[in-house]
Image (cartoon, rainbow, N blue to C red):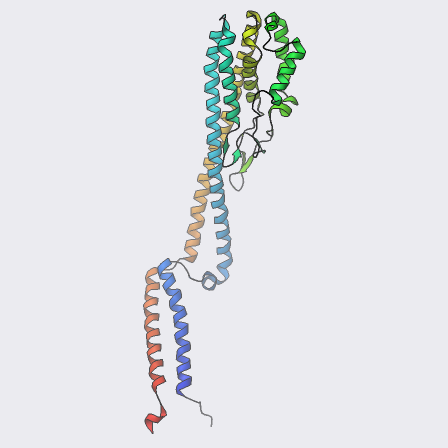
Length: 347
């Protein structure tokens, strides 16, 4: 006949183990009652844990795209604003050209504002945001356009082109003898080539022709930048340069009017080109906004699925907390009473 060994120590040990388990369960129940979420998702969901992990990974990807789109939208907004400013400046300058064309002092009148507009154009295309040059194409770490100043490659090339064509510098009084035909030929060939490749890339621009591409959703990518190499910017730079640095103040009236007419034509074409650039930016802005809206809806749906899998009833969790607290207190009380028992009390 077998008997089970019974002692106060074995009973006390059993109660302590039970108390420890109750403490763990109480901690989990308290966390669930506070957060409204399963304290151990893997333990509670079992085979469904994989689905929960996949949903959370998708939510992280969606949130990253939303954050990225916010940056893309900011870049596009600034670029759109700058293009609009260039259009406004060019349109206002066109009016000055019409007024200066028939003025005897037109070269002196138009040269300074043309130079200021060229500097403004270069500064605008060299704008940065978040440490990136917005008009650099994929070359976002380098300023797209070089300053037009004494000693710079672009001015040196223009000076050399003028000298090789006419035999004297732009500021020479001899410029008054340049014929209309000679000036027009220079503007349409030698001078124009300074704003075409390869001279443009060698002397003016370090921008990439390739625009920056950005992923705005899991299935969409857009051109999120504009290159300073766009023909509209080149024509604007060409018009401002010819008016500010081809010795307009020294030209005879006929040659000066040829410069004015050519610049007016180029600025008009540049304005049309800038409008197209603005339209492309507007399309990209709309695509980004729509993609972000869809991503937020998708994120809400994923969040709802995750919540449905992981949520707990706070009221039920609170009841479990109270029940476990009572069990724990009872276990501790019984353990204390049993530890006080001694066989000597019964001898």
